[in-house]
Amino acid sequence: MIMSPLNYSGNKSKIIKTLINLFPKDIKNFVDVFCGSGIVGLNVEFENLILNDKEKHIINLLKYFQNNSLDYILSQINQIIIKYKLTDSKSKPKGFYKIYKNEGLSRYNKEGFLKLRKSYNKSPSEIKLFVLILFGFNYFIRFNSQGLFNVPVGKTDFSVSQYKKSVAFIQALQNKNIKLLNLDFRYNKLYKNGDFFYFDPPYLITEATYNASWNEKDEKDLYDILDSINSKNKKFALSNVLESNGKSNDFLKYWSKKYTIIPIDRQYTNANYRRKNLGKTQEVLIINY
Ligand SMILES: C[S@@+](CC[C@H](N)C(=O)[O-])C[C@H]1O[C@@H](n2cnc3c(N)ncnc32)[C@H](O)[C@@H]1O
Image (cartoon, rainbow, N blue to C red; front, side, top):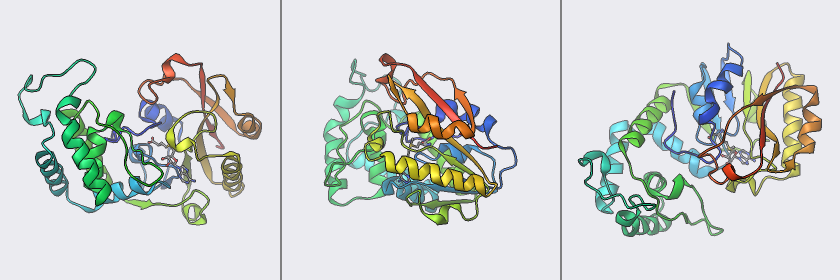
């Protein structure tokens, strides 16, 4: 299993095995239209993969991982950690840093993190952004209306487990036949050569920063694209929720009647840490094969 070091909000890592078991077995050209962290596409067997997302920071970061050697990327991370005096638990003996209750490593890292954030907002680079994500609160990737990264310091650092995840993830991006695109899902180019399309769009009725800009028009445009894929006898799978926290997506319930609806059983835990206390979520995979 390849996991993403990005721990992207709404990522599918908890249900990846379930999803893959439900996907067709003979995929040649796989298109992950709303790829986010990229982990769904990266864990599927394919000959060619397209990872697409409208969020340019994420696609630029994935491109950076694809186009630079692993040693170079790791040395760049290390240089930033040293320059901004951030913690390096991976290279230090256990117990070297005192872990404060509820604060983790944030006391050590706050000052350096804020300096790095300032530097990134003045002159952005992919590697600075990656270190900000690693050391930022809950690995959030969030920008304010002026486009400035505004996540506060987090509790963790580039730990042994994050290091291992990052290495495997970068290697997967480099070793496989993968094209990265930064397009809105409505672009025809995405649908030209694929034979299986996976859609994990923002959900109309749940919370996530990227859901705020998703509206009923986007939702209906998406259904049109799925219907058009179906009419060309190509296969798709759509992840979504029919109900969540007392809300119901009635458009989706109505539209999906003509396809196969598979309930996905899981407890969201770190995908959305607040959801634990909220109402039930009815997650589904809608397929046309
Ligand atoms: C639920 S997340 C995908 C998570 C991903 N499957 C994973 O496991 O990490 C939805 C993604 O859709 C992207 N997105 C939102 N609007 C879009 C659009 N109009 N076209 C393409 N991507 C879009 C967001 O940037 C976000 O990354």
